[in-house]
Length: 241
Image (cartoon, rainbow, N blue to C red; front, side, top):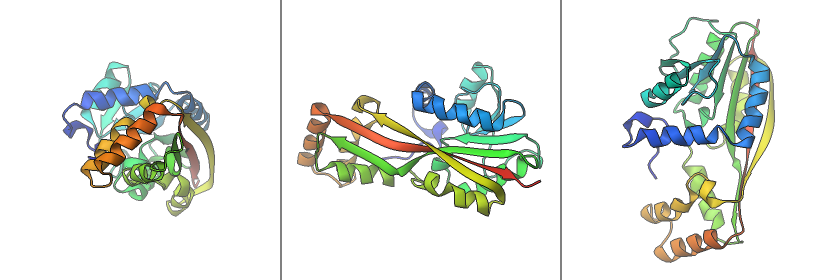
């Protein structure tokens, strides 16, 4: 399965990826943990790394995708196109820095975290939210192939377990008073579960399933019951005064 989230503008239809991100903004669990992120950062002087299509319009957004930035601008967001590992901002330029579902996709998440800490003001929070794929549970009517599908998903997220170990990375970046909270996502409709209905074919193409296994998995998805469950983790740390 081709990895696209770190290079949205290079895919054939980046607008489709923009729409995926806009759709996720309406999910209850995303709205819930984003509310907690806002409580930690406030609404003024906040840099939003990997801002995507711009749902949080009060923040200064930055993304490496022109397609995402254009959609955010159309929604009234102030946007900068740039690289999270080399932020085009002065030291201590922002009251707070946040990133929602971004670090899971970065090639160099620790370097990006150090940059986030650099541009936060002394005493300011750095807040990162990501799904913890180590908590992923997939069930489709008890189909035994679910374990292989779960492992497939985990191996196709670049930093699958970053959320679960983010606290250590925060401390390495020099952030203090580090803490974390978790929110659980549970989906019961496979059509909403991150494209899972296409994964069987993708596993055939990668030599992980044969055609019989693909059919068995797709039949299990159709028959149900279905459950896709994982935790979203919000980690916060503060730049030392």
